[in-house]
Amino acid sequence: MTESAHDDYQLPAGFERCSKLDPVVQAPTALERTRVLVTILANPGGCPWDEKQTNTTLLKNLLEETYEFVDTVEENDREGMREELGDLLMQSLYQAAVCEKDATDPFTLDEVCDRLVDKLITRHPNVFAPDDDANAGKEESAEEVLATWNQMKQREKRRKSVIEGISHAQGAFPRAAKIVHRVAKADDSELFVKAMLRADANEDSSQPTPDDYADQILRVIQQADADGVDIESALRNRLREVEQRIVELESGAR
Image (tube, rainbow, N blue to C red):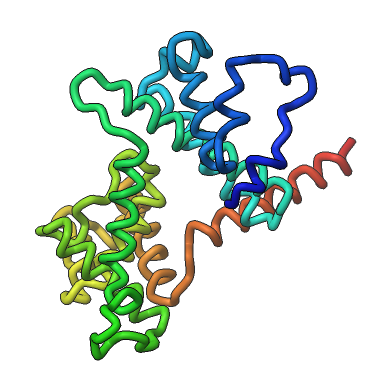
């Protein structure tokens, strides 16, 4: 953003004479304006509810806003994306404001941003190769870029397992899809198949167990990944069609 973002911004009607908003009006960019406003709300003298929030209490909102943004993208709702991406940004800024107030290990948004910049540079070594490097300006495919990213990530985090770092907090289905995708790229292509073997599996049983049902889902996820299908996205889109059809059928029955 340029200085014009600051020059052109106008406070909502009726709030022009609030001195608390002076730092917001004086912020040089739209992003900094947003950060300043969130900081005001999250600190003493701001919003009582915002002030008492923790990184943990904000997680529910963060997840909800993330999924709402996903909805707008998959529905190609451009106006909705404008709003939901803002809400997602707000959650990130609130988390950062809470981190800055931590009594034992505080850190600032600037530190977060600097770490992100370092990560983006080091994980794109060909893009940012020294001018006199033989690889400078070399074109790469999207697949090669992704492979380099994963290699750099593995090296930076010193992971001992291909599944290390996969969040246990996410739902079982997206977690399964992540595990399958990670393992599929491992050197041992049969690793996932071996891991699924169960001593108590009974393929001939007429009464499937819960594990049998789970294994069927895992096999579908594995096949989708092998075929290059984003199974999570496919399932969400299919559910939208089913939901719409349910509503239509309910309306027709009235």
